[in-house]
Amino acid sequence: MDRVLIYLAKIMFYIYALIWLLKRRRVSNVDEVLDVFYLDFLRIKEGDVEVVRISRYEVVTKCRNPCPILTLAMKLRLDTKYVCREVSEPVCRYVLRRLNPNLVFERDYSNIRPYSDGCVERISIKV
Image 1: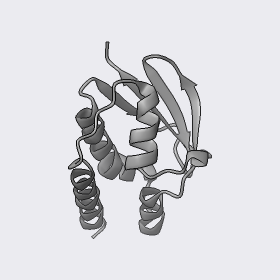
Image 2 (image 1 turned 180 degrees about the vertical axis):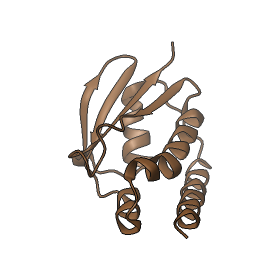
Image 3 (image 1 turned 90 degrees about the vertical axis):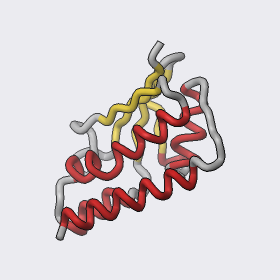
C-alpha cells in the first residue's frame, strides 16, 4: 500500500509540474533559479530558503519550509531519504531541465529533514 501512495504522490507532483510548465519559463543564471524554481514552482516562502552559498555557476540552499513530501513520509512512517528520491527528486530534475537543460540538481541526503534542521540542495549550471 505504501508503494501505491508513493506512486500516486509522484504522479500528482508530475501533473502539477506539467501544468506549471505550460507557461514557458526559462532561467539563464542561478539567481533566477532562486525565484523561478524555489519561490514560484515549489512555492517556498523566501524566509524558508536559506542561501548557503551562491556563485556564478551554483547555488546551495537549505530549505525549512512546510514540506508535503516530509509530511507524507512521516505519516507513512517511511524514511524521507527514500520518499524524496522517489517523489520529489525526479520531478525537480525534470522541471529544472525544462527551465534550462544545463541545470544539475543534487540533494544532500546527509542533510535532510527530520535528521537535520533543513534540506540541503545544490543546483549548478554545466559550463
